[in-house]
Length: 171
Image 1 (tube, rainbow, N blue to C red):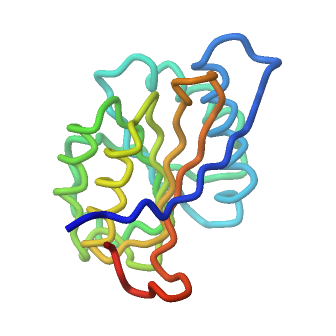
Image 2 (tube, one colour; image 1 turned 90 degrees about the vertical axis):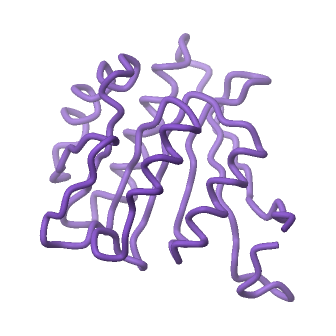
């Protein structure tokens, strides 16, 4: 099966910041405050052995005071008695993200939820594979925030599974 590259890439240039971690962190904070702040609880899944993300967490939490957070390990998805609907996943690489997606079940995650993946970098091929794996779990509202390897800008990738002449098709 060939995955049609049907994601949109949005570039956000934040030239006032000098290092990529600050740019990525600022973009995550902006997304949480602009979109997720309207929702009740946000679930953060963090790869705790990656210092990039553990160092970002205090600033993210303090900059998003209007949002309630549940912080969990990317390596351990536990039953909590409620479906997670507003989810942000911090993964250091494609393999750890794939392992996490393998742990996702319809008992733990809502089909109508919103999912944002934060990674330092991800290739277009791996982004397509991520979208396909979420598609197979019937999870469609998925975005990836990452850094462009070309110019250091923040890139948001998403896919459109319900588009004209291609509704319900993942290939």
